[in-house]
Length: 434
Picture 1 (cartoon, rainbow, N blue to C red):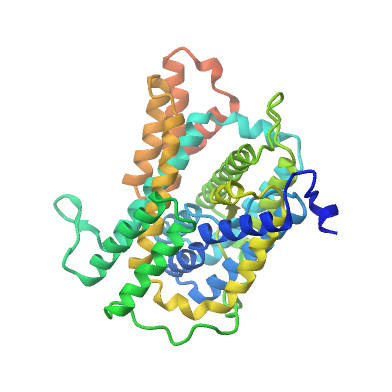
Picture 2: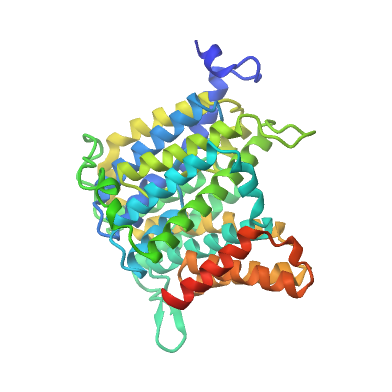
């Protein structure tokens, strides 16, 4: 049966190799079980409910990717998008989290419609690659900074905007320790280095009394009832231009994040046709990601996306969707360990945010910095995400600058209709909404 579903022999793999690949991927991305409730919980959502929603989104996403697309990629609520949901949409723009979830749901529906149409590949190619990489790198800077800030290492300052926090604070010292340990483990290529770095930090925090001990280890799965279905009941609240910007941002970032990761993992797994450049099964994989985002919004979490950590599973032999199914099973098992969440504080999660931010920043290497007309919009996309503390506003500034610099350089014919349209939309946004 497994052979018929996943074509193991055809892909030169085995059940054992797929299990090892799935386990490796799970360990590499399991930090999301701690980070996502911590981030979304700061919006007023129940942390335990978000934990369950995160698990449900990951299980459904991985099962879809495995059974529908037969792709060795794991899905779960994405880093970066959860930061945008929390810090920009809810905390900065004061949009209720229920309405924000409705925005995620609509973005997921748009994503599904796109994957079912012939526009899918065209739309992906209409956004300049430099801006795609700049968006990814900018989100990396953003979430790394949020890790430094929430842990107290960086604090607000009246004279310099930001400054070093109290380095004598036990909580800050624990965060610094966690960052160092996490970086050492990832640098040493330890499987699940981010997860183990957080684990060690939490243990040290409990030993020294900085973090209170959990009341238990194993329990029943927490109820998602406080947040489940809120996306549907608040669809009518999507009635402003600001929410259109929110939906477009979720849609655009989710699309390129998922498609970029799929192509990257497929390349590592040898699933790319070197003659045509086509990726085997990418259509079904994108559909799986789109459906997972839509269902994840119903469960009560920020957009679900493909995890680049899946490359760690591919590196040890994963080649089919069976590895994704194993990841789903491991997430289901993890659902019974929610009491451990009480030890996952901002000091513990800081290392995950910073390390993931560093990894995302590596995309700047693909931007042609020698061409000023390309460098300017890429630079402003990244720096404005960080300095405005807003992913969408950084993206907007980059999209405005691109047509301008390309036109001045005499390359206006290379600017497509979508980019001109987005420039006008974002100018209107800054003029009347921001």
